[in-house]
Image (cartoon, one colour):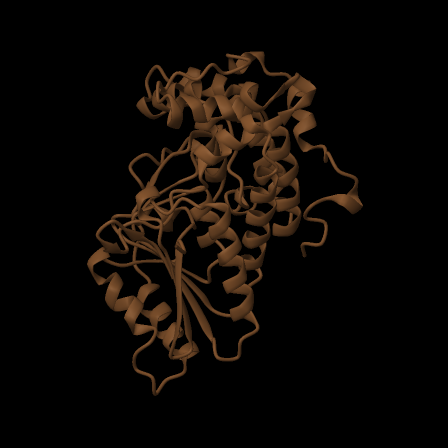
Length: 368
């Protein structure tokens, strides 16, 4: 049974992610199917506009996509299943396709959106959230890094908010996504079905014009309230050169600043190794195109599961251990190695950014 539903109505290609029991977490087959649909519709003159939404156990909307299927990552890494490599190469190709998509593309982001879901939505021309939207890139909590183009789109958040979001995994609720530049408009969750339907009704207008009307309605200018957690020190502290500089600044500020104390506590729970890798990823990503960023991230994710320079792979890798603690054994007590932020050296981090493939054999060599 397909885990995505698709149809063309009045010039609009409509996609519904249909794996509600897993909050629409992406399987390899979903990625293959989505790539085929977006590619077919890119070249189909009968499709002028594309829109995507999620579903939940009660029907459509209510959840968008909780990310990639991390239990699959865990099991495939331990089994040394080559499908894991196939997954990431295929997913990043899909991300790049969406960022360069030539037709108007709307993402209706009601409910949870994390990780791989962000890879589907951030390339959209119109990103619509609701008050129920829960958006995050929490990968450092599972010994991973904010991939699917996170180095590109997080690094382009205002100021140094991207570093903060990438390192902490802070969740954005509702219109907080607008203040981060990760959404274009907000609508009440109860109005999502009508807004979705508006793309395929009023057919005396072209589909492209209906899309424009929806964008005009959703993106009407209004004051965006800053999130309660948006401390003015984020820009100065998360602009500092290294993770240890950030930690030291937070420690100095934590005595009389609750935000600093809470942020410090959060970072102390994340993978020390991947905090350092992630900060470098965001800093490099700020200077890269999406295609080059995805090539960099494909290198990093290979090293996450095959950390040969540290003598770790599969079950002993940081990522498999992080997923084990969160989603498999659910003890929420990962055995990070090294265990402290202070223990990480540049020699541990730098190899993550070296390609394990010659340039002409890189799995994403032809992205543009």
